[in-house]
Length: 637
View 1 (tube, one colour):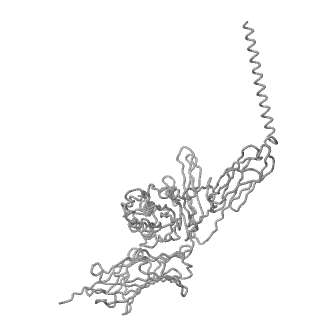
View 2: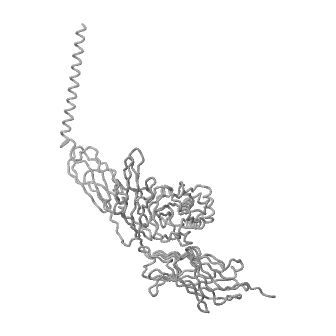
View 3: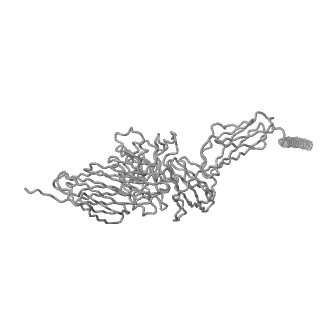
């Protein structure tokens, strides 16, 4: 009997970006015919060029096939110095560039033929696509390993220069971390890389400078008061403003924490507003003891226009996702929902060709998973999270990306992006990005977000408002209104408070009075909410206890009124009102005069004189009337 041996060429597809895929052959029997083991090193140098070295052991599990070649396809477009060897020496290597992919072909010097036979071999190449310096942060991204049959082991080591700084974000947590010869070595195993790739940041802050334009128009017949949303401070970012032109009437804070700058527009008026400033983004939350009021938790779990949490389709899908985890903590349930959204929806870049992209909402996205952009990834996550009782909301803003194919931006031509955040009792608000985890083929954007997401607006009370910078345009206008650039210059915010105390001068004892406070922030950063105390040595100031200033953004004004009174009508003294805002003290000298003295006496004399004159006129009128009446009676006789 002749033993039939089929020649099988091995095609191992390694999609480094966005995804790793391994396949032995298109023949099912051949796929199960070989086992592989990998020891991989990603070695990043000072300039960010990464040398990838893969030591592969190929084992034949069948006597019916043998392997004689290997193919590697990478989404990286910047690769060089490709080398491959096996025990027989250097291997013949071919390279083919097509669109955004590169295919490397390797021909073995010897065949892997026979049951149990093994072939150890090595391939290496260099690429600029894995490490990138963004402002003050080095970012290293390694794609996940796709699950495949007969992958016996996969060990990966990531080596980066110590000069990059301390790692501020590593996900997943490495099995080990060591330092040697000026390099930081992080090791990972197969089980860690099956669900997501490696995301490592080196550096704790990121800096951006921004120049935002807003175009306002009043098409009404009457003057209007309107607002624009400015980038706010959040748990993960600080914002300063060099200038806002023209200066707004006021800047207030809404329920979601947005900064709203207010302007008055006359009938038919157009107004161009420019906001210029800088932002500092942090890896870790600034909030040490996170707290969310129960009323806000309720609000952030309600149904909304694009977050249809009460829809039966959403409820049924959530039950499928959670399964036996319905009683799990918020992080566990959010992770399950996140994984579902990432794997279920498919990013559709063709929708970006439409300058006015229609937002579908969660229910429509669930029914049409093959046509999603960042809005659908965000809406579906929020709707499912709210259905699970997890407070969630939307963030819109600028997301820095050097590769829009892998990390796309979807809202407008002003390079905006949308991503969600959910509330965790232990960690507070947690930002995640299901869109980018989907488009990068599994780079972890759940455990901790990078330093590239700069928030312009927060949407929690409403799924459609406020709108972000870049969306304020005149009718029919088409312009670029968002300019954001990485910066190397750090800054410190300096809130500056000016307190104006308005009081009657002098106070009239015995009569009710009012003290008005106007607190204006003339600095470049938000003034935090601090205890507000107002008092005087002798004057009684009412309703002054338990007051707080509230957040006051740059260019913002807060106003307070307090009732006052004295002990009697005859008090006469000098006094001083003082206002305490945190550790700052402001004072105003006042005079209290008795009701019947000083400048009140002429008023009283005038009032008494007027009354006497009125009485005189009344008596005179009555007297004349009676005399006329008597004269008529005599004439009648």
